[in-house]
Image (tube, rainbow, N blue to C red; front, side, top):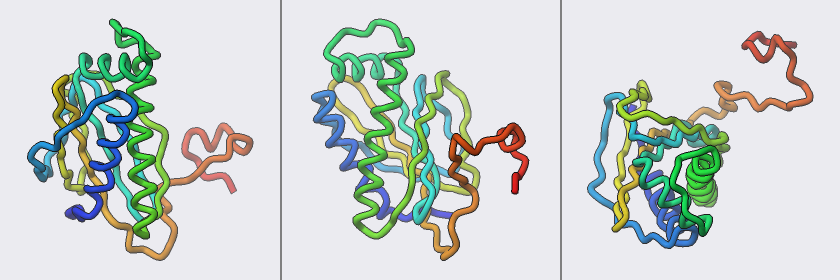
Length: 183
């Protein structure tokens, strides 16, 4: 299944706006490519899922050095170690970009919900998006590169997406936590 390129611009525009406002960085879009193989992760990868009229995952990859630079600029202090606070800052950056992009998609008629970010550390890890092709967009700046991977597709179903279930924390039972359906 291929991805519709109309989902590309909201993410590129949101990334440009957020990186400019939060980190004082003006990225330039590199050559866009389409990949169908498993993703080999960068040193740091933020993964965020979308469900609704647009479904799939967005991944933001970068070096630890780039992550430290971004967090240092965002928080106006120097980070020398990729500790919990630095990790949280990078994950939140991906969350803000995806949130702004999903708001732009909603204005275009594609309402979706985003998941909390997941931060993956470890170069050369393989992440598979299975039957979702990925549009890969390098965002280059004078301080390094962030690679945006969009593995998204339009949900044509009139039925709600049942692959995602919102959980009310007050209603979680031990059986629900291990994947057993609870009536």
